[in-house]
Image (cartoon, rainbow, N blue to C red; front, side, top):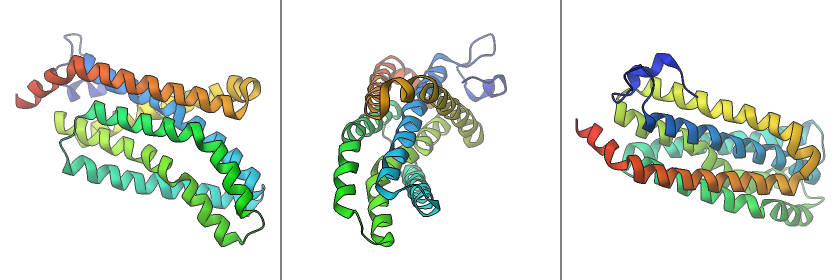
Length: 225
């Protein structure tokens, strides 16, 4: 998740013109965090289709619920990034742990709620679908604007920060699609795919905390300069 044209983004770039270790770490973490997010989305869509059935109405409900959650998460993440001085990497760690926690209980929750609303009206089922995915998709949607806000605060370039991080996360999502199609869904099934996604979330959280201890003071020094 590196690109030569953003070398000027980082004032601590290496002498060869590449990105600094701090920037590479943030990009790497955001690349990996895109993998579980896509796994969750694919698994949850399949789980919700078991509740709703597979037709044009159910597909519309599921996609709408995901898009609303991601959109609201982006708004919330932008608000947080403008109004708080919380450190970037610990905040990412918290989001990843919360996503993993929900993921581990998600399929059982979906099955239980689906049994309760079976045969209900389309409006009620749509509202329930939105309520099931609103929290995790809020977390997923908030990650990008939070990171962009913090990275741009350090480097002073919103456009380059957004392009770099979005590029990394999209590559991670693409990797998740290949992983899901070739390994997870054919060989592990939905529940074990969730376990894999949650384990990746925890690994990203631990990596973020370790990186914060290593680069935190260095980052503060660069902002003062």
